[in-house]
Amino acid sequence: MRKIKPAGVAIAGEKAGFTLIEVLVTVVVLAVGVLGFTALQVSSMSSSLLTRSLDSCVNVAFDSLDRIRSNIGDANYGNDFMVDPASGCPGDGSDADAICNAMIDMQFDNATLSVSFEKDTPLNLIDTVTVAIAYTYKGLNKTCTVMDIMNRK
Image 1 (cartoon, helix red, strand yellow):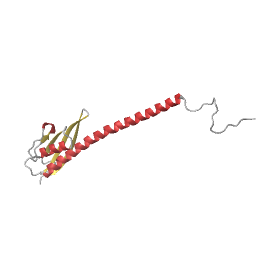
Image 2: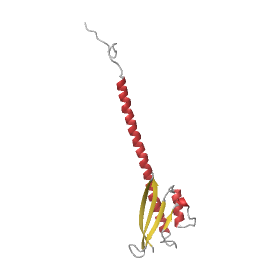
Image 3: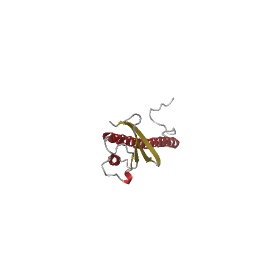
Image 4: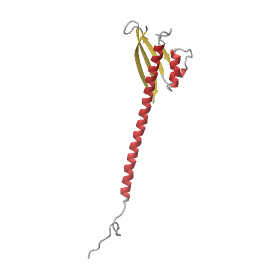
């Protein structure tokens, strides 16, 4: 007569559980997955820092253009100038001083900003103003440039 074994009961001599090789393969697969996820996070953080510096650059450039536009009747309007917060702000209340302080407030004080004017371009009494910002990111020199057309009337 045949013996019937009850369900769920292991008989001595049958294999039960995991082998050491199966456990080792599982650990290796999980380790590769964790390393891949870590590399993804590091890449994401690096891209986030680059995006922040580009965003700050564009914000400082547009802020500079807004300050120049609001003081279009100023005696200094039309004169090219440069701002380098590392060497200190002028402290004279000019556009250059306000821009320098704004750069420091935005924690973008490692940059150099230059403003140039092309008078009567493209038309009479209309000027093209160019703001160029040079900064260093991870040892590389980066530049962002913003141009605007302003009416002197």
